[in-house]
Length: 240
Image (cartoon, rainbow, N blue to C red):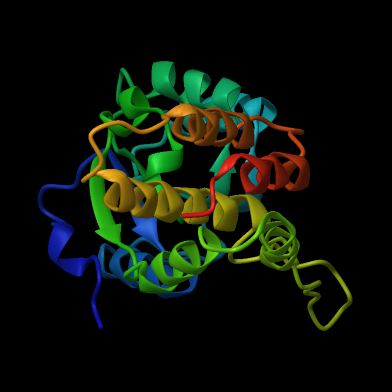
């Protein structure tokens, strides 16, 4: 199924696309589109494919430098960046970088959840949503809020189990769905579910909503302890 092709016009190509969805389904479409533009996706110095779990400030500075250097080429340049999360510092660097598009240079950022990015950064992109429906996360959130506290903590431990993936040569493969990305998606579903449960009540405590907001912000920061943050959610969310 073509999830993003209808948004891509080779005669009117936007300088920056933000594509929200699963990397394994989105990337092949982007590669095929580039080949259709006669941009080779292998052995081509004008095509750069970056796959990383957490895109930090060092990567942002490197990307800015590479895009500036490649700007001297008369050919179309394409950057395809797949990341599970972007640090706040990196996003601020990218925010300034995308204020002034570079001629003949195009960016495709693929992320699991665009809600994890600064709204001001998202506004710089042509946004395409190719997300699968979040029914599974919604069901998990429904079950989570009726669990006793210890069961909630056990649930978080299961959520954060990340399988070790290695290629044929034994090198570690960056997971398609990091624990940080899964946590952010679950928090979105949990927040939505709690709102639906409590919307009919005239008075209710909003403290746990504020806590979810803070946890979401901390999860976007490099080096934050995902397990500790998510377990704190298990402690503050009431049993409904």
